[in-house]
Amino acid sequence: MTQTRPLGFWSATALVVGSMIGSGAFLLPAALAPFGAASLLGWGITLAGAMLLAITFARLAMRWPQTGGPYVFARNAFGELPGFVIAWSYWISIWCATAAIAVAFAGSIGAIFPALTATPLRAAICALGALWLCSGVNLIGLREAGGLQLITTVLKLLPLLLFGLVAMWFVDAKHYTPFNPTTDSLPHVANATVALTLWAMLGLEAATVPAGSTENAQATVPRATVLGALLAGVATILACTAVLGLLPREVLAQSQAPMADAARSLWGPAAGVTLAVVMAISCFGALNGWILLSAQLPLAAARDGLFPASFTKLDKGGTPVVGVIVSSVLASALVAANYSRSLVQVFTFSILLSTAATLLPYVVSSAAWLVRGTGAVSRTLAALALGYSLYAMFGIGTEALAWGAVLILAGFPLYAWMRRRRVAASG
Image (tube, rainbow, N blue to C red; front, side):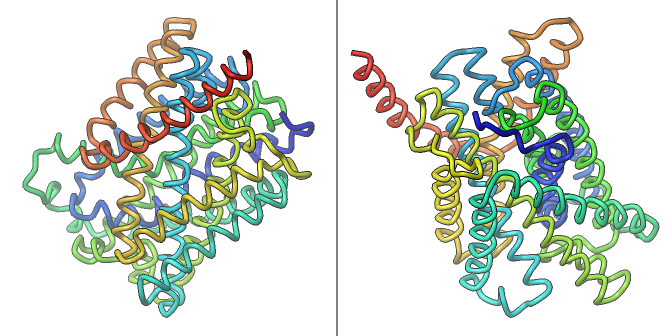
C-alpha cells in the first residue's frame, strides 16, 4: 500500500464516470444501428443490471476496502485459485478495453482531421500515440493521473448531457420504425444488444480497484461507485437514444463518429467538429483511467504472490511502473495486430473481447456477496446481479467467449510457475 492516498471522493467518482464514458456513448450508435429502436431493450436491461452490479460492488468495497477490486473479492470469498483467475481475466479485460478506446480516439480525431486516419496504418499510429501519451501521464504519478481524470470527466459529462437533452427535441420518429428491423426475434435482439451496450457500462467497478490509494476508502468507494454508475448510465443512454432518432440506420451503420455526424446534421459542420472534440477528450480521459486500473490490478495480485514481484515496484509518484508498461504494450499489440481492419471492425472485436473477459469477474463478485453478504435485501440484490451477469454472458456470443476462455487458460502456466516458486521459497 502506498504511503499517501491521493484519490478522494471526486477523483474516485471521476474514475468511475470517466472509465464508463469513453468510446461507448460516441461509437455504439453505429454498432447498434442494425437493430434499430429494438436496441433500447438492451439499454434498459443493461442499465438495470449495471445498477445492481454497482450496488453489489459498493457492498463488497465496504467489507473489503483493499486495492484489487474484483480480484480481492474473489480471493477473500473463494480462495487463491479463483482469485488468480479473476485477476487474470479482469486484467485481460482492462488492456483489451484500453485498445478499444485508443481506436475510438483515433476515430474521433479522424472526424476532425480526416487525413490523420485516412488509412488503417495512420489510424493505428494515431491510436498508439494517444495510448502512450496517457501511459506517460500515469508514469508521472497517481495524483496527476487522478487530476487528469477529474478534468476530462467534467469536460465530457456536461456536453454529453447537454447534447442528449437538446437533441431529443429534434429526433424524427420515423427513424425509430420499424421497431425491430431485423429478422430475429425480440429476445434474440435483446441478447445481442445487451452484449454491446454492456461495453458502455464497463468500468462501474473502477473505484474499487485502487481502493488502497483512496482516502477513507470504506465510505468513499461505495458512494463513488453508485453515483458514478448512475451519472454515466443516464448520460450515455440519453445521448445514444437521441442519435438513433436523428440519422437513418444505413447512415449510422457506416459512420465512424455517429454522434458527431448527428450534431452536424442538426447544427452544421461546427457542431460536428465540437462533438468530435468532446469525443476525443472523452476517449483520452477513459484511456487515462483504464491505464491507471491496468497497473493497480496486477499490483494487488503481485503483493499476494500470484503475479511476478516486479509488478509491486512503485515509482516516487506511487505508480506501479511495470504494470503500466506491460499493460500498454499488450494493448498496443492488440491494436497493431488488427490495424489492417477498419476502425469499426477493430473497435467491435476489442469491445466484445473485453466484455467477455469482464463478465467472469462480475459473475464471481456477485457470487462473493451472495455467499458472504448479510441481510436478505443485500443478498437478493446480489442474486439479481448474478443473474444479470450470467444473462449477459449468454448473449456475448460464442466467438468472444471462446477467445476469452483461451486467454484465461493462457494464464494457468503463470499461476503454476508462481505457485511452484512460493513452495520452493517456503522449503
